[in-house]
Image 1 (cartoon, rainbow, N blue to C red):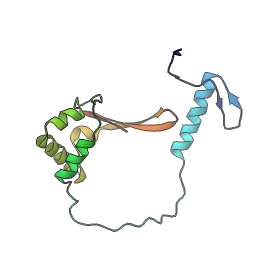
Image 2 (cartoon, rainbow, N blue to C red):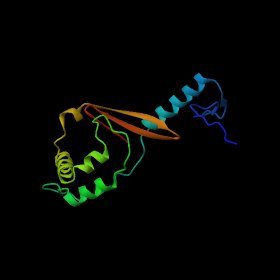
Image 3 (cartoon, rainbow, N blue to C red):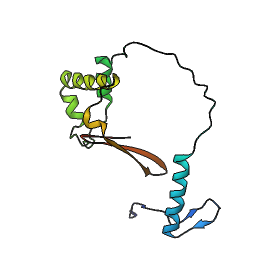
Image 4 (cartoon, rainbow, N blue to C red):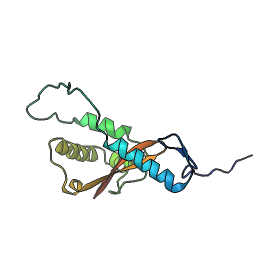
Length: 144
């Protein structure tokens, strides 16, 4: 027998901070809001013991072989982002697409951010039980 499947869009109950079970929708939303505000706004203690070498001079260039390898690893048959480009389209251009992508990435590493990327909005959204981050850039979309 095939069982009907449906997406679970919410939970029926939630255990609150005090340990009480919350069953009403408004209470669940308030509890999640309180949890997310605490999670995203708390300051973690650290000993400032990070050490890193100071590096001066030009940044390392991304090599054509590294770019080609990264393009080869891209997942296929995925929906395009706001730019309308898919992995297959970039892969089909071979050397030209690889070089274009390298020029873009190298420019970003050097601090030359495309103008339409400078105005962006970062939005947290939940996917399952893990918080995912979505970066919506005008002119192109990146989603983590």
